[in-house]
Amino acid sequence: MNEEQKDRRIRKTKLSIRKALIELLMKKPLNTITVIEICELADINRGTFYLHYRDIFDLFGKIQDEMYTEIIESICKRTTKDNYGATDTLLATLADIFDFLSKNYEACIVLLGSERSQDFIDRMLLIGHDECIRNWTEAYRIIDTEFLESFYHYMVSGCIGIFKHWLDSGRRESSGELAARTEKCVRFSLGVLEKYDEKSRKCDVIKAK
Figure 1 (cartoon, one colour):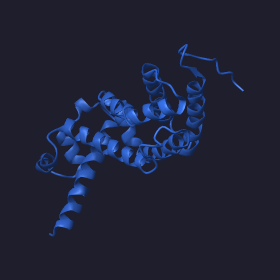
Figure 2 (cartoon, rainbow, N blue to C red; figure 1 turned 180 degrees about the vertical axis):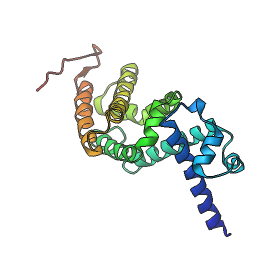
Figure 3 (cartoon, rainbow, N blue to C red; figure 1 turned 60 degrees about the vertical axis):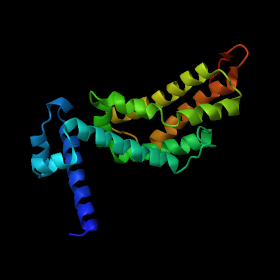
């Protein structure tokens, strides 16, 4: 067996193992799943499992890492240090991310719904943090970093919440419709930065049109 065939076989084995864990997580908590159950579903022996993962929690962490890396790659397709946080770039990036998450919705359900989901959410909250703060500081001439920090977490937490609600309600809309609805929320929220008064550190009330 040459190296290419060996690598392909390893990738196929890991994919089977990860699919098995996700399938089990749709039915029961992480801490009740055994290596034996995963091996039976993936049609492998225990030795093969331990060749790639230390235990169940290591496997779960690797799935988180893989999803996180792919989300970063979705973001990098459109963004640079100069345009990250700009409204048009942000909205286009959201559409890419929602499309990716939609295609991997079963993994998202277990990542956002398990008892260890907070680790994944915390990492999501920090994606592009520094770039957004810098971009908003320059674009809106706001130097109140505490306000921008709060606004950033409000924005990103809201987007995650919208996506989680979409999953929990059975994905009644397409990922494109979800991105369009999120776009309205994002555009409205960014109006807060336009209304912010640096001297008084207050925002004028934004009237609904």
